[in-house]
Length: 411
Ligand code: MLT
Image (cartoon, rainbow, N blue to C red; front, side, top):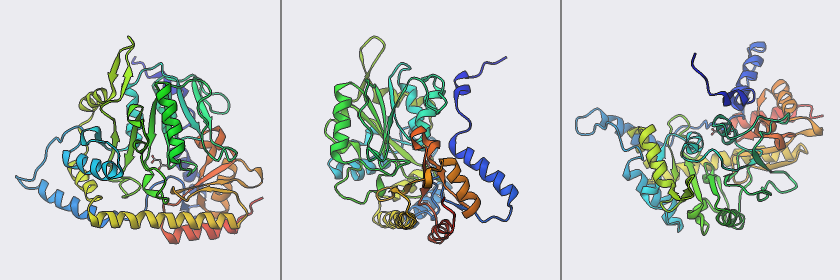
């Protein structure tokens, strides 16, 4: 009989969001008329920017003509999109990123997992706690960890706690790490990193020959012009970092699928023999073999994000969600809860009241307010005692959720 990948047996329960879905389904089966407000998974709700829709409609038209039809595109993405991204997101910010260092993909979730294909199995890995669960689970699946302990921490991973005491700023690894996952603006805590903080990480990575996997999927939500949007704004980052970006949250592409990963040409790792190997070449090889690129229509839609109309529409979308975040923050603070994040990120990280556990608070909000959040402990042991609320919903639903939470018993 065929053998399965036994590392999957070590994964805990379900992936967080399907597990929440399972609980919602059970609740809805018991309360079929319950009107739930979903502030759990960070899925966008507002329509796509008009500029993207028009560009995609034109692309669909073209695909139906002999001259405008496109078959397989380049696995790395169309040059016109890579060039537009390089110019707009990097060169105009003073970052030396070239078009051929940008690899278009169908999502950061896939890329942050797939990147493990080109990395060795014996790297010492550091993740924050709490953390976006994909980074951890993909390493479990690849056999890079031992089993989980009773707090859900996997053997072999170094966890860097993000707590209110350290202002949700991860300490540098206490023991050397080769591979470090960072996400700013942070999912789930909503914290952001200053230039000085990122410089500290880059300096660490360079002095330890480590690689930083930098997830910047939420950079569009940064409000303070002094905060960096990319790790490549930091000196030395081209020697030690790969960056993941997405059109999912800024332009509402969660259902359209388009993202990109930046791998500097000069970035290297070591082979088993100790020789240097180009990570760009390995990723290019991996993508060429295992990926056929993102659809032409979606890439034309992504390109339109950078048109002047697209930029204005995306700015309106991100401001809209950030206004939601401000409403959530304010209302929870008015209830006397300790609230973090939500100022440069679409996530609000709230301390549970009266030492309630994360799942207990999740259940309380579900039962009494019919509001779905995400239990902080689902992001890691240090997330216990927190709940994440997403700002991705309509104004009306956010206000409804907040009014209902205000009527809940929070003891
Ligand atoms: C989240 O809620 O954390 C995000 O939706 C996850 C994702 O983008 O995959």
